[in-house]
Length: 609
Image 1 (cartoon, rainbow, N blue to C red):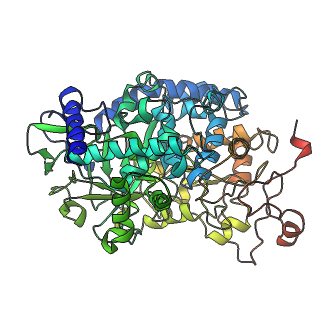
Image 2: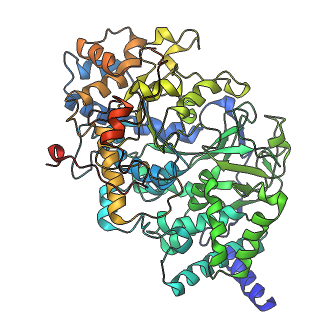
């Protein structure tokens, strides 16, 4: 054992003497001048602002192209964009691989680089921000890390998202390769620990997850950092919406996640929260450095702590529990002991679903005096554990004009019922809701039974209805809500379905494409124009510009009009048009496959061409 430890320590020494980012183990670099933290009251990070300013010319040009192609009637795109500055945020929910794959199809429908473009092609290129949490973080994180690779190219090359086997046994029945994989993960995690860094079950989980999400990198991205996204070609060319991963801060020795939980965001430049419980951000590149009120306690700063796989694992740390299955795998003793510590010890078991950031970069912060700031360890959990399963708050804080909310939540029969939006709406009235305003939304019963989950729905369509929420009515976004639903595939697979055949993977992605594009416009030949109307709406109101008749009609079709449904539940009956009709019709004609794990296809001969 001493020999083995000596070898590991030698490896650590090599890492520290060569480069802190050559392996999974962080290392040390010269600290920059000044504090590494800042107050959220200063607004968005200066580097982020500079990037958004540079990107805006690209995004606005792409938006112009989209609006021109959308066939908007009686609307002068060029004249409008001379003075208006609409901004777009994309938000992808949690939900395991269901969320990643369905979201991938939706993103593909927005991508002008797609081999088969949709009526919404160009929205991705027009967007300023893209956010994901949990399964959505796997989508956003893996694509951003891989230079914003187009989804269809990813599938053609078949180098990423190999999920035919679960991450527990990535190589299937090949025991030799599985053993080698876990041996490599063991070396990486133990080396990090021997170098003096706290490790948690999220380190193990993040490294396993990287075999599916960071396969294009040497050693599955062991040395690729979330801050390295800024060095990718797409980012350098200002072609990438600014990526944000969401997580939740948990107070030490607690398990309850609610409105009082602190919403964290993990970006390539900063990690932190706008919430009153923290109001602080730290430089992502130097997270892991011991700080006192934001200042390094020595001239040496940690670099390399922000491993991209570890960050994606943090946002989805609910899935740490899958590692309990490793008891039946031939894994090294160190990993087995580490995992057993969390699964057997009563205290540690409370924290099995969290990531530990030790030292806490916000320790003794003058920006807040809360349990988080007083703790020596920062505990971060799955971003959707408080019910806000769509990462809306980071986009709200950035005051975008329109948010595409892609919801793959498993609320009812593994379909969304609007709960994620309801939680964000309700949070603005809590102690943590200072500084946010979110448009009115109805209850879950109304979402399900008035077709608000069965077809796209717009919220916040009229600022005059928002005056009771905030004085800054023009800063409240129009929310374009698109819920997961079946078109060509029953995509309500279990959140904990950990492996998908290539056929299942393609079915999920294709169905997501249909959700976003409305069967590529077949269900509404003005769908692109209606989306355009939603994107420009807030700027039109700000500038006092009247809606066109076409946009008024679109809003009649897609805006929630404030109606609350008080009848009996109608069930999950999805017609081709996306409408709920009756539970009886649903049960007679469409029940097959609804809860079978998503393996049944909907036969649609009329749309197969």
